[in-house]
Length: 317
Image 1: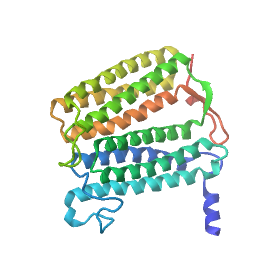
Image 2: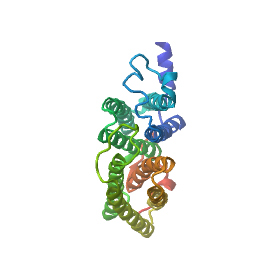
Image 3: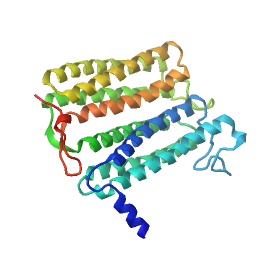
Image 4: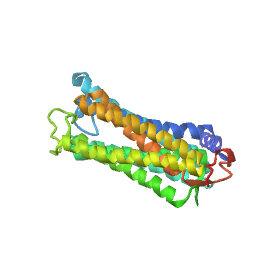
């Protein structure tokens, strides 16, 4: 009991200090990393490397030598889930004493922890249904949502609680939200495209039966519209003098540009696994940066747990 009390007193009490910030970044990085390892499972045909769940085989929780590289890849991805759980628990503990002053941080860590559990269950259903493409797609959607939540967590750790007051005119925030909607539509259609393509995770897994070539065109349309909206957002942010929005919008444009180049290249080259893997991870990076763009359009409230820094606050017209 004494050790528990000492640990509790050691936790941050008055400010979201370096420990909180490190764990916030660890949450975001790990949520993105597991998307990469999940992509590797599919792209190497290791989706059924562990043919059952929650065990890897009927008799073992871990991959066996007889399962070869596919068992190692799939089990490695499952193992990373435990790393995410540990990070989520530590993140929760790191703000436990701040829960009254920073309740939004507590809610965000709980949401991340709950999301990891949901992901584990969906992962199990994915295996038990023989890698059904729609369940696999849902798996990715939840990952993207968790990346967005982790981005909000990082942002709030640094900037404090969200204010009810906007940092930009309402129409500018509307433009940012429209751009965000474009990002999500692009990502969701991309998930369906992947479900119709050749990388199913296992050679015997059926695809969703849709026309992959036609879907690629549908996927590109919202991507180009979003790119145009981002350009407009950059111009608007510069005109209203909102430095944070301008920086985040420029970052968004850069990620979109790389993603478009990778998307075109993979389509022209016959979907090589390396480019597809990069495209999958960049989609989550895109979601993270887009989330940050929207967050910058609202002011933050100074709290005693996170003192305001006027130099870091956005400047609105």
